[in-house]
Image (cartoon, rainbow, N blue to C red; front, side, top):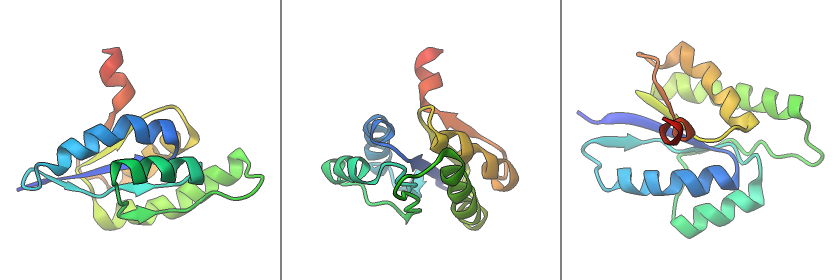
Length: 127
């Protein structure tokens, strides 16, 4: 039985750091079911990296707006990400970085991930 892993990416630095992890997990479809989510907090720069690594998101929240504010980003992430986590019920949410996208991806996970597990890639390197 495969583990349902949900990598969530919002910015170019997050994509650059998570892309190798995603590509490696893609090699093992029997072990990992990937549900990649992008918030597109920084749309143009993120799309460049996704194209380079040939990563096609399962969900694109498309939250970027002109003159966006931190409260606006926060509200759009919470509104759009929550139903996806509820529907997919991942075994693990994989996050990286210290952006608004990273911070608010943890919130809905606590409600819907059966055994609350998230993996923050930065903490792997700091351990």
